[in-house]
Image (tube, rainbow, N blue to C red; front, side, top):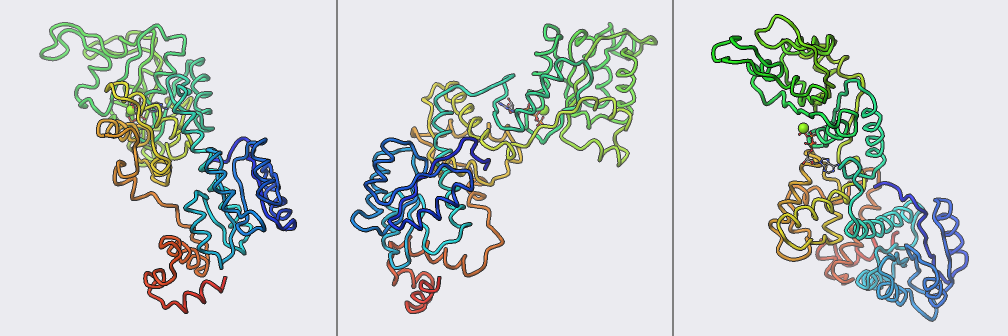
Length: 446
Ligand SMILES: Nc1ncnc2c1ncn2[C@@H]1O[C@H](COP(=O)(O)OP(=O)(O)OP(=O)(O)O)[C@@H](O)[C@H]1O
Ligand SMILES: [Mg+2]
């Protein structure tokens, strides 16, 4: 996930001043704003006057226990997460804490990395929930009709505006479904050609034999059936913009003809022996690598250079961070309105699955289709994890960190199993298929 842009604030609560200081120092060094309290009453007072994103509290404190703070936060502060610090003997306490709504618990002793990882996870969750609410409430940020606010998309908006004020040929690349056609339209409609035609041509969808006459038109008698002259796409686009979509699908023969148009600014209608001047701006797109095709001899290098005067490369959806949430809300609203249904919301968990490490090979188009289907199928007012399509749910789960020692992974697994059975060691030992004594030893070890 992208790092938070504004400083997150954290309240650290422990009765041991030394612990509080160490945590404060570590977290401040990471750029967080850190408040501290030496007990629950003081912590509650702070949260009443200062909004905090995350509370990190020790469980065992004299007088009021950390559990009470967890309960207080859960009942009063919707936007605050809690990490509870526990010692091993109080695994039951940890289980209780998680049930009370502590986001995470950190068993002592923990490393700086473990602390920071838990902090990041908890803050991500706060941020997602806020974004979710914000995105649901206000209309999406949509320059040129393109939803997006991530750093790579901001670069795209800048590139569109530059391309719009130029007249050179633009090559738009990017994986399937990343919005290449939308970008082409954005360039045309914000250029000085906006009042003339935008003519998209799907080069891959028109049979080779027809493409030439479709693009350039033909004169009467050019071939059997040509009873009268007909203009082609280039003439239709005169004064405006032609968008050659899937340019990589054209034959080498066709590429020669396109190159000629680009060089001479005139088109030869099929059957004509004189060229006609046209004033057309050319935008082209491809989801293949033209340099690769050039290397294989399947695409003319000179045409590639002619097309690639300005190049715009669209980022994959998986590289656009929180844009996925913005797009999710945008499509949810759009399809709910279209089908006259109330706009459903997504559960935290369902959003987390959407944002997990699924690769979205079909990018924005795939997300749009997923949402459209969800809206059609949705029964309640909340979309939950089981409603999501299988490939997404399968690739959920965190990316495994493959640099962790076995002992650490084992300890975490044991804690999770214990938590899942409410701290019942006999049950946990059964699931783990080890005897209780081994379990006790393993718990003691770390
Ligand atoms: N940033 C965006 N905001 C809103 N809708 C988007 C965005 N990007 C793409 N879309 C939508 O996703 C779909 C695919 O976009 P588009 O056809 O422009 O992609 P493409 O890159 O041309 O795909 P392909 O390579 O398959 O031709 C369209 O329905 C489009 O409206
Ligand atoms: Mg397209």
